[in-house]
Image (cartoon, rainbow, N blue to C red):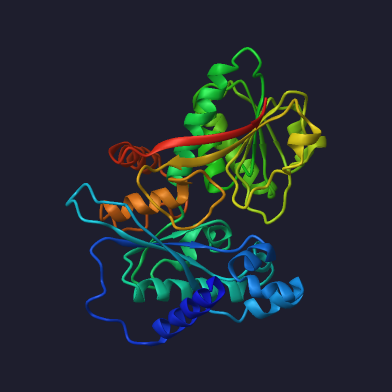
Length: 362
């Protein structure tokens, strides 16, 4: 029955894509959040009948399927006018690896998803997981539809900075060095510069591109010339860090047990998660915190993110807040601005959305 309902919904989205948009479907405050399956196991969960086919065949078939609506998000009420705010989760059916391998096709699918969002009456779209990184944080999508765009990085950075500040405060005597993996990305840069501004003594910034690392290091030294900075493309450098902040964009687990010093604390905001979950079993001395999540009272996502009820990723929460406040502009697109971090923090407080961090280990 569930499979039949999913298939009917899938073809309903196809018809909606190609039928003329209704003049009455434009909602005053509606949003879409865009996601993608992590791997073929997510396909099988959504469409159980596909289990009779091998993973390779399923991936081949899915690249030809249009974007589909996963669920409607309910319970959000605008504090401006007291009206309910409509929202939907839409997925393109490319796994993380497919997105990175077939970027041109993936970008076309993302634009198709944006068209579906318009047809559903949305005014703003949030880019989840790797849909942000393969479109340069949404910059490549600006102006291609009537939708405002955000990648949610402003609230993610705000939550990360709050959590890390608390960790440092709680373990001040044990913390001598902090590493940021994915430091040259949007969130990584905001966190790195903020930590330099807060007089962190020893910072290790890890990125893929030497030129970008060099540019970030210069900015950090301007912020605080007394901070000792190690900039490297080598992941092995994090073995010197007491706290590792992971803000990468990869379909694979990058951080392994052998990379970590005894008693290290990992704060992971990557989606899909880039830390090997086996670390908890093999290294009981390590504390792993899944960060960048927000408690959102009374919001029902009608979808299992693998999080507690009424809890969402900060990138989704940012999209909801902008819709509720009718801020239909390209918000977190390109480098993160301090004023936007502060602005979205104030909105989260207004809606009583508070940071939620789950941790494993000691």
